[in-house]
Length: 494
Image 1 (cartoon, rainbow, N blue to C red):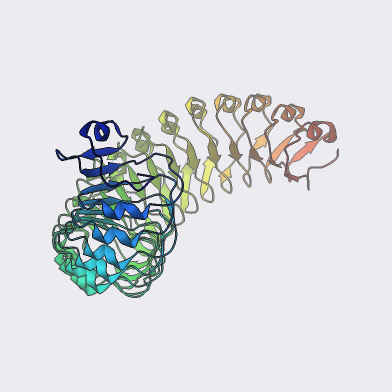
Image 2: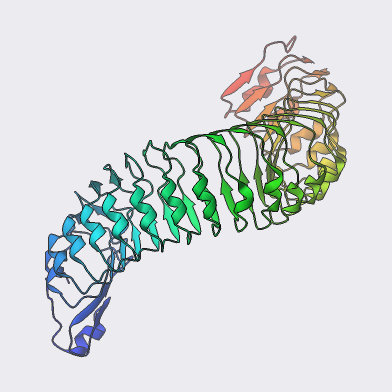
């Protein structure tokens, strides 16, 4: 290929050439050199191989321009130049490839406009122009690609409106326009795409309300409208009975969440965080038995934790932080034994931390800080050997720190600050040699400064201020060579 040869004279030569396929006449019909470090530029001479039906140069460390000579490859059905370091714009002449079915130019550093000529490809089924630097509007002409089943224009700098003509692509199964700067409303014409299984418009600076016509997309498996400026009430969720992934986070949706969400029996991922939703947490959540990710944080939900939350035994991530949820934490939540992360921080919860939480054998992250919880850390937490982050700051914990904390050998962050924890600081904490951050400030611990902290050599953050420690500090701290933050105010006499 490097010398521009466009014909292999003997069939044997072609069969032995890496990445080349020839027909019975010895003509090159396919070049697949994907994931081969070729370096250099794409040869113009490839445009002479007019019998080519497949050209795959993905991830070949190529540079330079896409040759205009490619316009002669009218037999081509697949063109993949993805994940290279190409220059310049995309030649509009690619619109002459009348037999093209798959076009992948993703991750290739292309910039400028998406050529309107790409809307002239009558057989195209797959188009991926994602992860480039295109900064034009989306061409209206793409609405002519009536055989298209997948369109990915994500991670560019596209602006303007989402063209209404996209709604004419009635064979589309998958559309991804995420991470652009479209700054427009969602066109109601998208509701005509009734074959859609995946719609991703996240991070597009979209405004306005969700069109009612989107409720016609009843075959959706994944819907992501996150990180926009959408407002109004939530779409009628019960319409999307096949959804497995729903992300409407980081918008300005208002109002309550209807019990219809409990009818989404196939849902695995639900994220409504960072909105302005209010009312009690939706009823019927416990019926979504496949749910593994639930994030309703940073809203204005109130009331008690739902009684049926303990039925979500597939949950691995549960985040209800930054709401005004009140009442006690049900002991029955200990049934959620697959949890990796639990965050109830910044609410109005009271009562004690359930001992049943010691059954979370897979738990990595636990945060109930900024509530009104009392009592102590349950002794049963000694079974959480995988736990890395333990945050219980700013509560009303009022007993001693249990020595059993020494069993949390994976712990990297421990914050028990701003409580009423008393007694001595347990020597067993010297076993927590993976600790990077330790914050126990503003408690009532009363003992000599724990010299065994010198064993915690990975510490970068240490705050033991506003307790009743006494005794020498300097020699102990001197061994903690990675410390970046040390607060010693209010520690007393050294």
